[in-house]
Image (cartoon, rainbow, N blue to C red; front, top):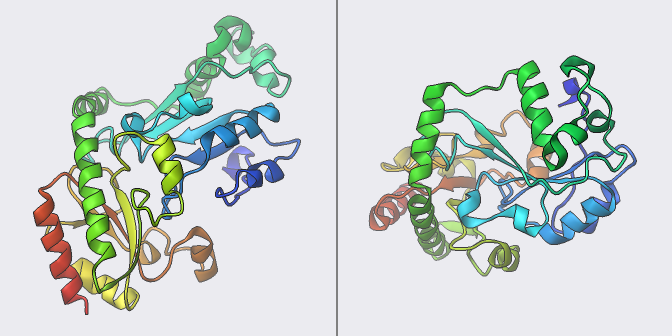
Length: 305
């Protein structure tokens, strides 16, 4: 981001006022996820949207983990929603792609965004707020940024993602049902120290998840295995159904140990700041038969001792 001249300030999303305190005259947007990684925390979208709009800036929400089937941030005040379509929308880990959804309600002519209200000399002097009206943001994204940066899908990847969309409701229902069953199972297992899943009453964001999600709580969960990294490695090596992959959102179940993989370049202190600990294991629960998944997890945990 810094190579594009963009600075980022991180905040604890549990308190919406932390967003307000981080806003400066240079702030151009607030950015959040519908489900944070790895804590799976849920923000109060309406409160954060109000804070953003008071400052004259948009709220951008990454809805990859819950998809529009479980959560629709635009209905709670978000202005722009983005997705990594590689995950649940595609559903099979076969394609790389992304989606931008412009809610069309933000006032880009409020004085904070001259790139939308001044003529663009690289595109025949177009003024985006005049030419596109409410669609100024997505219009500029298509005719300017897409042209200059080139993030264009291949036709075949687009085809695969469209194929995935056809089964999205069925998969998200099964993902959510299986993940809740897995979370309840792990919460009672003697080899498990703790479980993070927004569908559990014990999760700090459970009430917010019930408010903003519909039809389930998603496929992702994290848990702590007793003993730390050693047992975590033995557990993962012993699994027969869960695949060791860094991706999420496949129809098949996935597992990873973030401290030694996705977050291994961070210092121990930085890992702790992001919520990654040595005992943490992340699951992306698939759509397999739940009895098979529970049996696989049980035998893996027993072999990790």
